[in-house]
Image 1 (cartoon, one colour):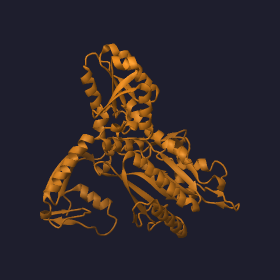
Image 2: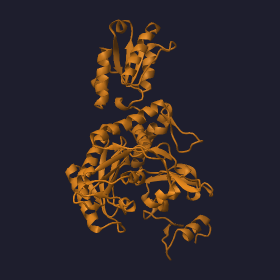
Image 3: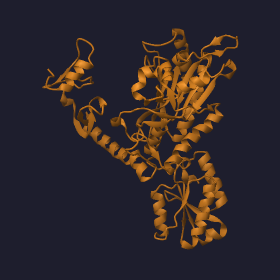
Image 4: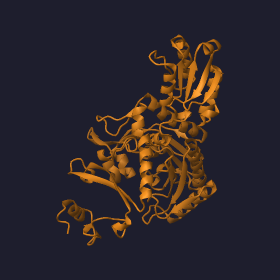
Length: 493
């Protein structure tokens, strides 16, 4: 039936493990396809071929090169037009395009999948990490720094070597096998196990911004959304089983606080015990009950995805929605009964007996790189002041006021703001203001003779809302308030 196509024959020979498989017929076409399917092509009222690209068979660079054709269909031509409008807007917001235009980041063929963050991009990166760090201090997390390279024995203990080795960068040194870490959790288990632990230390909330590497296929690398080198706001909470509910409530409150700052709405799904699972049934039931109760008390609607939990513990999946109503999963709250067993982790309980802790894996940003991609497209490069890489531009009305403009710029920079001055004699004042607005500077400060003599500035926004004259000291105070309180409405200056 498929002898005309060697690739389909390979699929049947290598991927199908049963005596029978299913094929689908549509007119004269008979094909291997999982579905879902429509009964006939008459149901398709609108069709569009979107693009084509080269790919390798099974994603392997040394395999045959193929052409992949992408298309989309709708039951109504109106839906196709709506989709096309959404794609046009998404193209304008593409983080790769904005990253180049705003000089935030770039990639280079000499380090595929690893991003170069330029100064303005690094400002966004560090601001996001500082936001999380500030919350860590308020919420009882302790930051640790762990190695990037581990002996393969660690990954064998954790189970990653058996199930994840193809996704790891490994190498040999001094006749031993090593690998770059793709995640932090095994290293954190070593930190927990470094000495005897008491029940008084629990919950132990351990945070790590360590650099991670995953050997993603070159064909799958996509801007900042799929990279090989990245960092996470990664944390692991080592707690007693009876502390799961309160820790989950804390994790949910943490992510709501951060996502509210970003302006994201989000959805919650509880994924419960799969058919194949590790651990005791009673432990699973108690943990799922604690998670469900913490979700109920959180006060937001949630759904249950029965049987979709990981084999080592139930989890809460969090999906955020951006300005284009596109879903993204960034945050993770995952219970883990397996790693404490694999690493033989224990703590001394209040009765003097050794007991096994539970690990909660959690991240809110997830990959910082991926979150920057999402935020770039969500804001369309129009960054809120607290996160903006271009916060203030000082514009002198003429060359005579360049020194004062630079003085104001320096005062703002010393106060912690991303400030610049435009003293280009080749442009008019109005052109400089327009350039600053197009470059997405949140505030433009115009200075001339009056402002210099009174140590003031004339303030306007990138949307051309004029706020008028204020002293430099008052300006700094107001900007600090806007930054520290994450105020997004710059017109309320």
